[in-house]
Length: 269
Ligand code: NAP
Image (tube, rainbow, N blue to C red; front, side, top):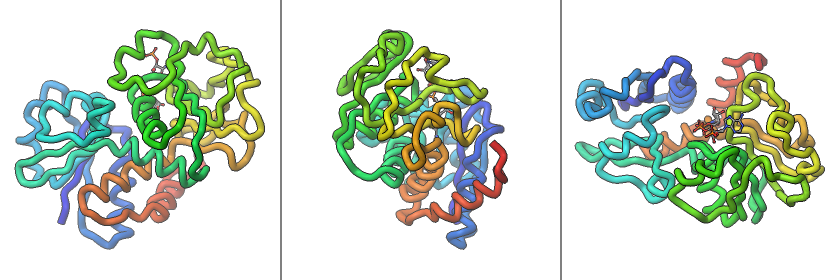
């Protein structure tokens, strides 16, 4: 039996137990997954927590994704490149960090839109933007990241993207895909209006991705045609299934988890 968990602070709103337990149920295992509240002051005691809870693997969420790295024995290349870990495998005393936000996002994107070399605009330059950038850069895409402050780019460990200020977007630029990696839209805001981004940036063929999953369809996604947009839910489920793959070497049941999630939200948005 595997004991898994997500650590974060605060942790009460996490959907990870719902997702992972739905997968365990679908796979017919008696593994379990808990949400553990870990105050930043307690992160240095992570190995004691692992021993007490007999954890065989765990996820890491805000605010520990960067700080956890100094307590690990190894970190995979992509997680190192963005300086953030969301999944840790426990192999005896050896703790290894991974980032399945990167792989989960790309699984979701390619499932929805297929493989191609694209010109991609990421709006926002925080933690999620770094994962999305790494995913598209690894895919060979031409990535532009737009932030409201140039200082945001100082936090990036990589420079394989075009930095720009949101305020300088004219609408004449050509992008095949636009990704919202900010929280703007969670409260019903219209991202383009809020940031004064011209609607001309979106054509009939432009792909729109919002990392937000609640509401299910933000005002930003309403600018894109059917079949050309995706919310943040497939990324969320895929990052969990990729973590399960790292811990067990097995493929998670994406469809079963997806159904459980849809039942859970029950059409609420
Ligand atoms: P974060 O690290 O706090 O970064 C947020 C980014 O948005 C920052 O660059 C911030 O700019 C920018 N921003 C916030 N308000 C803005 C505004 N009014 N105008 C312009 N820029 C603004 O957060 P995060 O972890 O990257 O998360 C971003 C979003 O992605 C959240 O909605 C989160 O829920 C979602 N997310 C989804 C998934 C998924 O699996 N679907 C995974 C991770 C994150 P400043 O630095 O200038 O404030």
